[in-house]
Amino acid sequence: MGLVLGIESSCDETAAALVDEGRRIVAQRIASQDDAHRPYGGVVPEIAARAHSERLTPLIAATLDDAGVTLGDVDAIAATAGPGLIGGVMVGLVTAKALSLAADKPLIAINHLEGHALSPRLADRTLQFPYLLLLVSGGHCQILRVEGVGQYRRLATTIDDALGEAFDKTAKILGLGFPGGPAVERIARDGDAAKVPLPRPLLGSAEPHFSFAGLKSAVLRAREAQTHAAADIAASFQQAAIDCVIDRTRRALAESDAVTALVVAGGVAANKAVRAALEALAGEFGLPFVAPPLALCTDNAAMIAWAGQERLAAPHFASDPLDIAARPRWPL
Ligand code: KG4
Ligand code: ZN
Image (cartoon, rainbow, N blue to C red; front, side):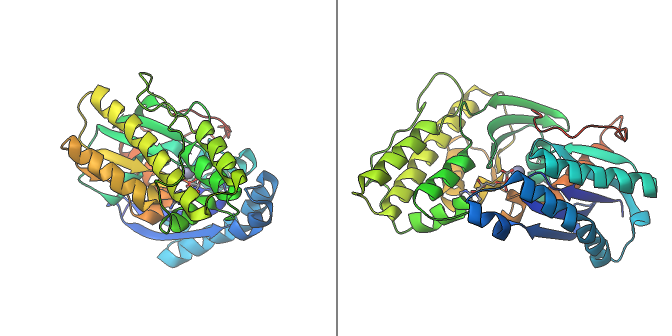
């Protein structure tokens, strides 16, 4: 059945998954560290690395158990090798190397962004290359033309904060706790998006990039003025952010060579208002809109296992060497 074991540990989710070549997620486990980081209002790298090192190996054992298989039944071991918090990435990659050596299985070092970029194909088997991908997470905000496995053309990136980071900082300013994105979305439903005037950085700009730092500062000023309800600030922030995302993505679609679909991935793709706006934009261009199910949008190991399957199936596949380095930064 062609199984790949995937391992993800680049931020605050410890995750393992088994995905077969028929795109079935045979088993997966995720241990969230939200409770450990909540008192600090954000992910603490040292705490994350220690938690990964305690939890990962038993989590992998449990995932294999769930599927009723052993390491000997697996065809390859894929692990996130960056970018991300380096301590956590090292725990996952070193674990994968040890398993690869012990079981004599190919090692596949996956770029976490490649995992997000290919995850829509795990959920939707009809999705063909090339597609335009909006990748929006806590650490990244990019528009890519995904042309094939290993072929990613970056059309835009952020010049300051990532979109998820802007959601997280807004949540912090509004005292909504951690993680911030879902909390902002929740209270925004009860707010008036037209109440608080906020800037839309780079809207209509001739250059392709994103910027959210000015929006975040304006949210802080609005909060400090104490004249607006938190729900109205959240709703106005979310609308301003969506206006920016749509403007930038519309520009990329207009400038790009033909694509088969507009696709969104990464943690912020879990946001229903963001999804709805992107779906309408895809409609403007007569394109299908593809968004993975919510559990595949936030960090998970199934997307890493699937990226491993795609790499295995690509021409000229070669196992990665056991001395391959974990990389805190690794542009696609
Ligand atoms: O992809 P992901 O799990 O981790 C990274 O690789 O960064 O993305 C996490 C980010 C966080 O910034 C989180 O606040 C944001 O995705 N996020 C959301 C929502 N769910 C998660 N942002 C807005 N609305 C949501 N519903
Ligand atoms: Zn991610």
